[in-house]
Length: 280
Image (tube, rainbow, N blue to C red; front, side):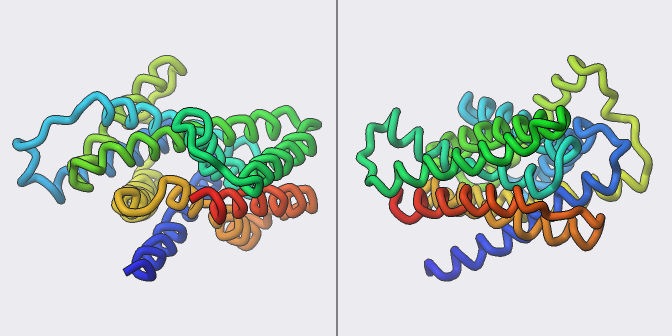
């Protein structure tokens, strides 16, 4: 059974890794537009899959709050991909297990080993190396900062999701999670004065792809398994995303994988591995 769960996590990893490539394909399209339609269409698809239980279920405040943070997560992640390389954005954008571990340490008062503390130190050291090498480029620096904050937002979504999934089914949770996320992004679009209805039909086809593959398939697997696996374990799976996304970006967009990304990324991944290995 455990092997089946990790097989599902592998499928989820491949699914979510594709989103960064789509953003790079359309540099002229607002990241807010991408984020809104990804979440809104995903919510529609999940509503259609679970229409029989819609009248029987009322979402609670935790779902609404998690949805808002998920919306912020996607806006920040897509912005990071726009401003910096796919390698840096996906690496720093998948450090959620660091924050879930800190939550367990500081809020839940769980005892942790020295290996976990070492892992936290190495993870932030590697992230710092990436930010330092991008400091000469204002846009790259801002992109890396966006990626870190998007990880913080995702950590919150997973922490709340762990609690909610104890009592509610997968679709009862994710249909409202995605809906509230789209509402949050729509609100952000008003503040940023961005029209989410300005796009081509070619772009819309990719909106559907983002809603179905990385979201309905990828994220739903995460939220399905969060009920039976630890939050840190589920949060750690996307750490493979930098490898998959960067290799794809190298072949699709000839985007180089710099030595700083290799060094800083290796240090960060080593740190997160220690957190996962000794933090559960």
